[in-house]
Length: 499
Image (cartoon, rainbow, N blue to C red; front, side, top):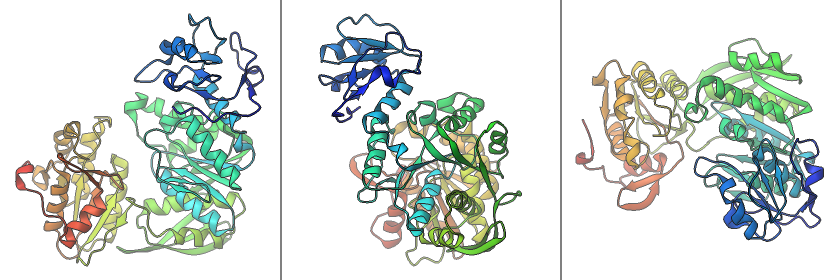
């Protein structure tokens, strides 16, 4: 990982780790740090982390030879040239050190963490739009990318690291942001990404069944999500989904103020859906004795729930209800999130990132509610997703779609492994075709669609994949649909399909 820029005065490790039961905390002033021994520069503090690929403890000697000023590790190491500090969790120390080296930016603005199984990115962008509408200066860091008020960057390539988070927050603070909205996943929480960050607020969209391949069990996943409260400032507030029983249970152990939102259960912030059409929906947002109408171009009950999460969070910060409504309406499109693709066709096409049973159910329910004809679904999953969910996804599609095209998410050979389990979940196999090539699957669905039908293309969202095994050009589902409907992309050969 790239070393953090040098802190001119340095941070005393002994002072930083005074509350940690470490062995031999050195009296070293850290000016920069890294967890990659290959990038150690003279004077860096090297933090030994254990990852799925390597154990940084094995490279501590190399880090010392490259000029490390100190080594932070989780076990005593045979490194005698530099001071070493043995701690219980080097990831937690790494995060704290990264934040300290850039001036602890979370102490200078209100940082709001958004987590949960579904809707994190959408809620983050909705909340950002609301704050902008209210006149607040806000920075955002989510799976769509990064915005500090001046610079708009694409998302980081790969998992977010503590140095990247620290620099992003520091840039937001330097740009004068009063609020920062940060999306954080359960995996990032389990890896202590937020160590050193003081959250002013936490919004949990919902806690379902996700990322079991990383956490090992459902209970481990839920415990990982709960860790977000460890970073909540004593005076911070929690925003919780009252429609989600698991989230409600978290309130029992929470020693912070809380605000609830719900579409179906009693809550402090609620909504009533008035109309839903293929291109928009309208609902009434209610907070206490106040109500306001909201029209969104993104459809589905799950989007209303995301709007409620963002609205409740904004209201907790004193934003007026009318400004909340304007902010929600300002977000007319989110790439790959129930994104409508219109090319003059007489049927609806929705591109969505849904790649789990819960997400697919929400997307197909929304499509069913607005479709006057059939619902056709192109779906696949990622090879690294927990295999227990593959048949469940097939069952969801079999129950809620009239026709299905089971395909891969990209060109990776491993992506073909889930195809048979995905199809096996459908009770009636005649409803589904296995079409290995994703573009061919999309082309088939578009060719079969009739007037009034709705085609849902799920699993990839705005993520790109190779156009072919021999072509390095990347494309996403929305662009594939536009090219197919516009005649700019020839249908893929039937030889690349499976029955």
